Image (cartoon, rainbow, N blue to C red; front, side, top):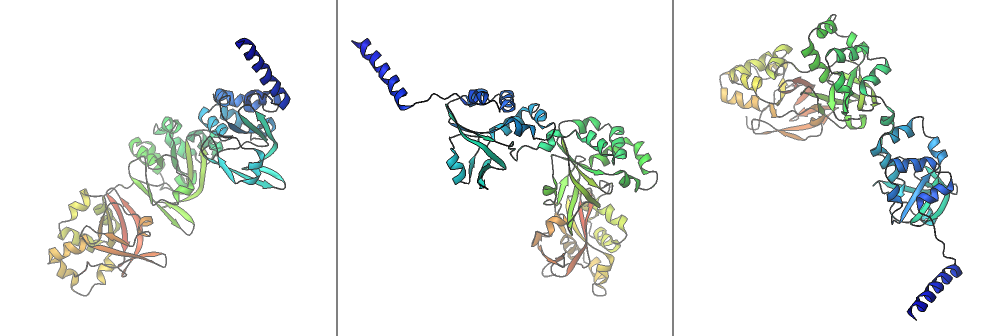
Length: 437
């Protein structure tokens, strides 16, 4: 009796399924194969190891680029993706939504999160549904665990840089450009070629041949005979990681592979690295990015004290520093930021003030330390501050007027970002005094 009842139940269920039109759909992989227009997509899914995932329980929505969509990509993109499993997986998962999204939702909502993590935007234009910039050419292809919508272009998440996938390494990119013959020769002479071909990534501020030619006669030849110094200079043009133009303009400095920072300033829409202007940005390489600069930048070679000494405009300041016993501090301590009054700034003090201060060392020391801030504060940092604590203990009020920084409403910063091995110097046109002095 039990066997008869079971058999009758099976027949009843089968009959019900037939009578009500229940259809057994294939999984998305088999469905895509049967469609005949997704061969490249299926090859990519297999290469990324996602076949079993998409055959899984789901539900999934797959926005599936046709073979024609893949063929429309720039030459070499498909091959580059197939050789980079991480990038390929990210691109494919960006086409998948971890739930069922029917065509009605595509045309009625603004978008949804992809399985890759980034958001897909839905829109309707001229009567067609779009996923990001891809047009849906065939909606609602049912599968056993979801739905497929065929689209006419390949979607690329922001996390994947196609230009980088197609690019060569930094050295080959520089060679192919044709403007960096001297730089490449110097890199090879210094034994840094293997480093700049390694995975990195690196950011290179690359001086052109013209930039090297602007150095004093014989400099390049001299450097090629002094490999340690040449290496220091070249590494001063390299920053670890990829720093694109959009990032550079938000920075006030960047620490180089040489160990010392470069100052980054933005003026009138122009970007400078130390004294060199960035003329071309974001030249993509497979292991980093190149920004072209119009001058060779040199790492600081002297301390704050020695840098002030070599300038020639700070004799009075240096006399005061030595009298106050601070010379060694500015030679061996730091890093510091020094707001340095010129000789002309000291000359603006009332007659006899400097001589009086030289005989009153505690007051002199107090005033000098009021011109010093702990750490490196670059000009890009100064413009974002309204005050800065000094080594003396008081604070300097900072304001911006006419595009220039002013200290305590009296002294104007007339020169910025003179780099020293133990800090940075900004030139000011007045001596500033701590409160109560």
